[in-house]
Image 1 (cartoon, helix red, strand yellow):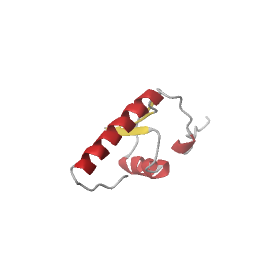
Image 2 (cartoon, helix red, strand yellow):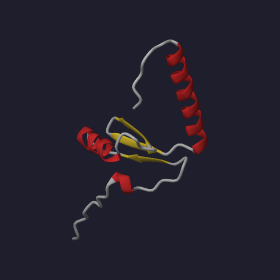
Image 3 (cartoon, one colour):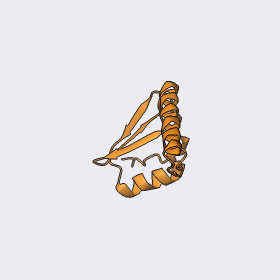
Image 4 (tube, helix red, strand yellow):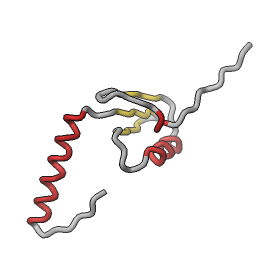
Amino acid sequence: MNAVSPVVKPVSQMRLAPGSTVSIQNVSWKEFESILQELGEKRSRRVAYSKSTLEIMVPLPEHEKSKDLISDIVKILLKIAGKSYEPF
């Protein structure tokens, strides 16, 4: 009988097309934190974790444009109100 070894690859090496989603079951919280650290803070992928399931989604480019527009509006409103903010 042959033993099956899991294939281990860094999540950062996954190549996903825009608009695609991948779900991975049985991920521990420690593994999730490690994956977040591996991907870094300036990542293009969206990462979610719930009930031991990791979900990675790559938004479509048109969704990123809306995000940037909303971000710019909020920055302008903060500047007008005289509030300081720290970019991520």
